[in-house]
Image (cartoon, rainbow, N blue to C red):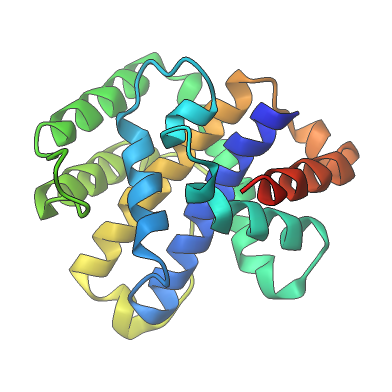
Length: 204
């Protein structure tokens, strides 16, 4: 369950970050945003943790959000909705080989603009990832309807960041499925996920 918890935390982190962006126009921790985006460019990881640079601390926000959501904290209802939609979308995506290839191509193109020496991604990276999301996953049903402040949602820079992080959320959802995650486990192994997340946080 450790691998599943790490992957699911990746989904929760992306959902929480998209919620922050939609409501404040920024993220509280840019390093968490960068870590989630960077996970898109890890194509052949040896372990689930390697997708996040083998640094679980980069998933702190996701792990904490997972715990609060599974403990039915009402403050996290919007985030939970985003997570459930992302998990559904990954199933739809994996059933569409053509779209999967398009997504992979878009991510590969975005990777060309990345610079290992920089903490922040070039604007072209986020724009390319956002465009990839818009042309592919956002055409599937159900769509992720991000609620927030109209002022921020009308800002192209903010909406691109939201789309890019949602793409990272789908990537983590695919990873979760690859390591054995299922919707039934969300119902019947909630306590196990919480315990695993708590254990991971204690190990930091």
